[in-house]
Structure formats: C-alpha cells, structure tokens
Length: 186
Image 1 (tube, rainbow, N blue to C red):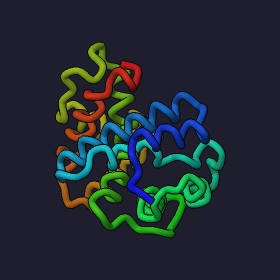
Image 2 (image 1 turned 135 degrees about the vertical axis):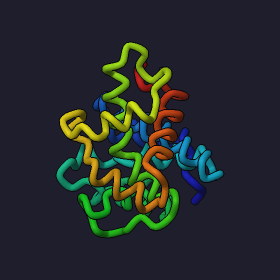
Image 3 (image 1 turned 45 degrees about the vertical axis):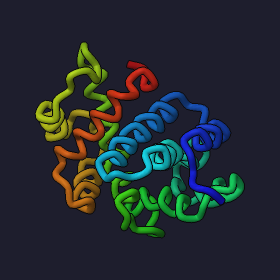
Image 4 (image 1 turned 45 degrees about the horizontal axis):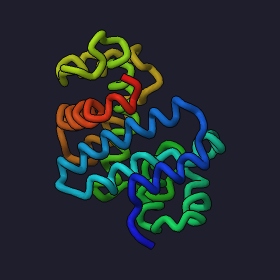
C-alpha cells in the first residue's frame, strides 16, 4: 500500500459522499491541511488527501462517525497509518480509539472545525476569502453565536495539542482556503 494521494482521496470520497456541503467541507479541510503541511514542511499532497477524506463515513453513518472509516478505506487499499490518522480527528468527540499524536493528526483535529468558522466568515464578507485577516477572524471566533455549530473547545484543544498560537493556525486556514477559493464556491 502506498501513501494516500489527493487524486485517490477524491476518487474514494465520490463513492461515499453526495451532499454538496460535505464535499465543500472536504475541500476546505483539504485546503487548510495543505497550508498546515507547508507550515510543517511536510508532504502537501498527502496532508491534503487526509483532509479531503477525513469525513468519508459521515454521510452514511452520521451517528457513528469515525467508526466505519476502517471498513470503508481498507477496501480501497488505504494504508493503515492513514486510516488511523483519519480516525484520530474524532478523538474525544465520537471515538476514543486513537488519540492524535503526530503533527498531521493534531493539525487535522485542529482545522476540521476551524474551517467552518473561516467559511462562514467568508460567506458574509463581500470579498469572501480575499484579504481576510486573522485579527477579524479572531473576533468572529470569540462570538459564540457566530457559526455556533463549530466547536471552539475542540479547536482550542487541537491548537493546544499542536503547541501553536491560534493565530498561526487561523492564518494557515485562511491561506489554504484562499488558494482554493474557487473550489470552495467563492
């Protein structure tokens, strides 16, 4: 088995996900993960692939999220390390199976919810992603009523696991999502 590529991740996700909002979320997390890979000088395509495929079981099993990742991805020949990485983003939320320990796992855990806040903020701005600033995003982050479905505690926990400042991770999300804004519908 070889490392997961973004091309392969897109091929796999199409088999399990049809809802547009889930595909856009996959693209947003993938974009953010690419920027996180750049930050950590890691394999960008691989990190983007992990981000793209992270919710592979969500549409079919929303109440058992992360519990069906292995069965879906083993059939596709996805590497066990990649499967474990994807499962780890649900640690303490919908599974206690695998705690995020690597920079890749911790990044996925941190940006998953954060991309929702970035996306919601972009939707309300006339310029969408263009020129988005961390300072303004932090104000939206502090407003619990804004993008209320995005769990700030999980984001804060994930950023803390990385040992980074929230602003650094926010900037990565902004950079990655700006780079892929057309794929995100902006």
